[in-house]
Image 1 (cartoon, rainbow, N blue to C red):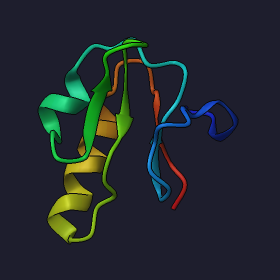
Image 2 (tube, rainbow, N blue to C red; image 1 turned 180 degrees about the vertical axis):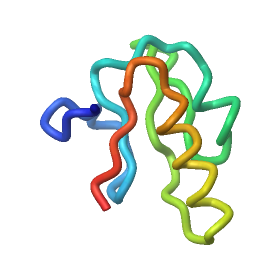
Image 3 (cartoon, one colour; image 1 turned 180 degrees about the horizontal axis):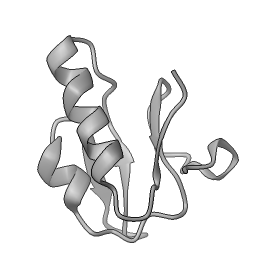
Length: 76
């Protein structure tokens, strides 16, 4: 489970975030590219946009559920 205290500072504010457990596997960016991107300098993903529609929410939840190291958090 992702840790709110360990979330990356480059996440936009809101419900979803990526924490320091991220192994840069690219899965969240493949599932929901409009919401997750890569920090190239540090080699990890982070949230660039929060979901606004039900479809957006489903994509972010899918990314959260499929994350192999549980680095995506849902604070909503």
